[in-house]
Length: 128
Ligand SMILES: [Zn+2]
Image 1 (spheres, protein in one colour):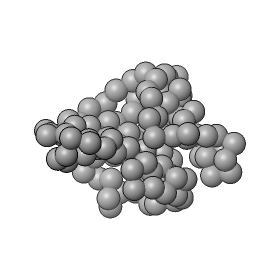
Image 2 (cartoon, rainbow, N blue to C red):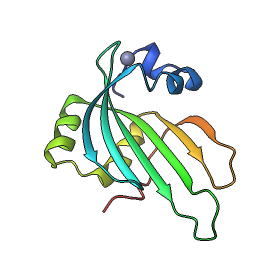
Image 3 (cartoon, helix red, strand yellow):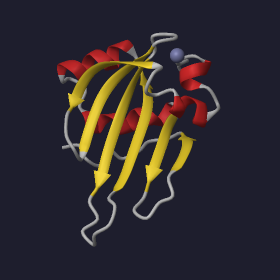
Image 4 (cartoon, rainbow, N blue to C red):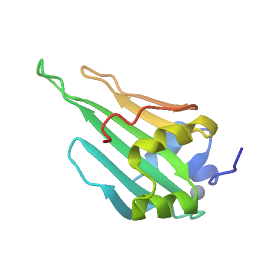
């Protein structure tokens, strides 16, 4: 299993990691720029570890707030390059989760939001 990040960007405390997303990371590249599905690359200002940030909004046709999901997962330099050049497709990111922990912020319609570390493959629902 590969080693990723530092205590600030990949530590056990999910609230600390989530709370640092705005000021603790440098925005590197927009991979998919959409209002309902977005993927971008960020870099930890502490250790330079790259992360992929995946945002998915699921429209609730019954009205009310739409459910929003964010997954934050570390990627290798090679994977980051592949995402930027298009050789690594966003939908393939879910398979990378099988051997690395990723932070999930789930905000289902009607709330409340949940924040937790998870391991294992995941579905990148908005990707084509
Ligand atoms: Zn770090």
